[in-house]
Length: 114
Image 1 (cartoon, rainbow, N blue to C red):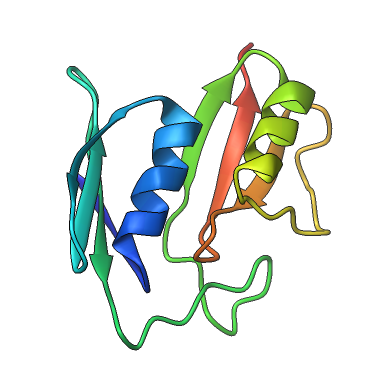
Image 2: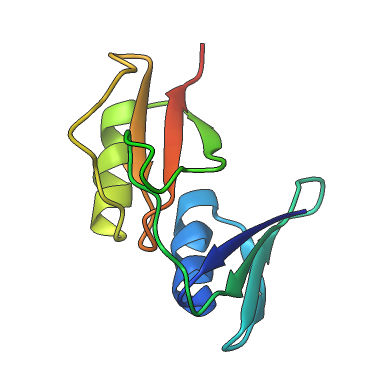
């Protein structure tokens, strides 16, 4: 299991439910989780002192990032931006991947299936 610190676990569970299509398996004020059989669950725990990472800077390091494989970068990006993702200006992946941020500011990548 992977667990991300965040200010609002329910918001991130809903966002990652939209990103992955996985079920919201648990949702409360201090902790939420999305899961799907055969996959590593993603949990979200409230951290009152949470400071979002700064991509690509290191003032507040990203500490980790998730990668999601997709069939269509443009369509996925559009869907995720509508769901609340952000898109940093710095994009090192060219036409192979995109860096986005979740509503709490964690960077993640959507990568073209190759």
